[in-house]
Each structure stands twice: as C-alpha cells, then as structure tokens.
Length: 147
Image: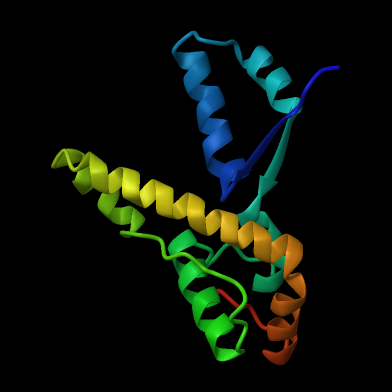
C-alpha cells in the first residue's frame, strides 16, 4: 500500500510548492511533469486557506505573525484560556538581515516558533473551531484578520 505524504503549512499552496517545483526543474533535479505527478500525491493542509472564510475570503491581513497576535488577543478577550497560543519569535522581515549577519540561531528559533504556532492553529481549526465561530459571530461576521 502506497503512503501519501501530508504537508501542513501556512500559505504553502500559493508560494512554497510552486517555487519548489520551479526550482527542482531549474536545478534539473526533477522535470516539471514528474514534480506535478508527485504533487498530486501529496495531501496539503494550508492553514492560511482555512482562515479565508473568517476573513471575508481575503488574503489581506493573513500574515502568520499577525494571525498569531490577533488570535492570542481574541482568545484572551473571550476567556478561552484552555488553548495555548505560542508566540512567533522575530518578524519574518528580519530573516534576511539575520542571514546576512550569520545569525542562524535566530532563524532557527523563528522557524521553530512558526511551527509551534502552526500546530496551535491547526489544533484550533480542527478541535476548537467553535471558539473561532463564536468570536466571528460576535464580531458580526466581519473579517477577523484584516488590517
């Protein structure tokens, strides 16, 4: 029995996978046809796309750090204290500077913190979605993450 790969990420459908397919082809690691066939066998959960209904189907405002900050504030405001929401360390905009300054530990810390928060977000979306729906209803179905 063939195993399928499950990929869970944030905005992976729009950015990461098209770029990986392009790079694999450019570096002659894999032809586009082979990469697309492999892609069809991957099960993808894009957490950004799962948030679109709660944001008036807009991508606007759905940066990972912003989602973390808003969810943490909303969960505190509504008293949902049974859900841990990890903080994303360092803004993503800082990563190029960290790289230029050879501050690789900070990059690793940032990536680990993103993974921790994505795990929290997936838990919320799969196990505590009623919390988000209650907040969204209370906010008159307005976009939760828009600027």
